[in-house]
Length: 131
Image (tube, rainbow, N blue to C red; front, side):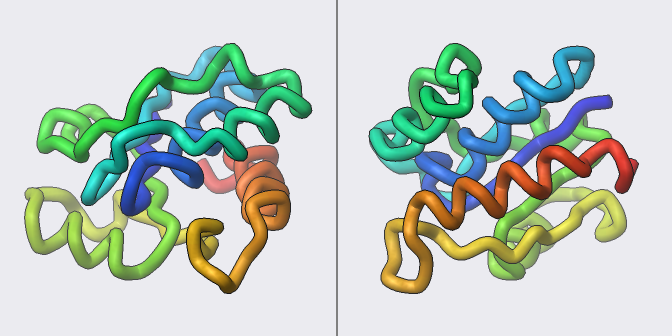
């Protein structure tokens, strides 16, 4: 199973999900990307992954989403509807290959990093049940 996580900056949500998936499902192939990648992985994301024993699984830098990543994925997980819309507008991909976890970006005022992290962790832990 190959999973692609997509958020805006590929700085917090998608790299955290990628790292946690690597930890909980070592047989899965996984990567993450952003629609508009940031310049670095969020420090608070790295700290939260450290507490979870998953820091070693985090990528070194954000990546931009590509058609190759879309093609290689069995499942694409996005964090907001706008990410799904972006993918469908810019890439060739079946709609049913994409699921939305609807988790806000902790860079904004609507959610704290710890809460976003816990929501992502809960979703990752039950990922195998949606496959």
